[in-house]
Image (cartoon, rainbow, N blue to C red):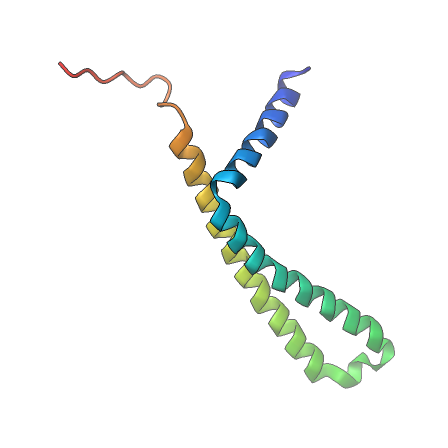
Length: 106
């Protein structure tokens, strides 16, 4: 197996560990991402339902678009919080930096 492929598999394995260690933040990620996804789907379905009549429903569609945008921004915040927690989790389990001089007590 090539070095690059082994690195990718190792990364996937580590990602599973990160999700396990950052459990509460996975819930936050879901709670902030799911409403944005559902809102986007509802907006698209509503556009498909209206088809040619969409121009007569501008206010409704504008409100749905703004709601979708706000929920998407909330989902970005949730992703940021999860990535920050995952990074913290990874950094707390990394060995000491290579090349760093070992500390001596004497």
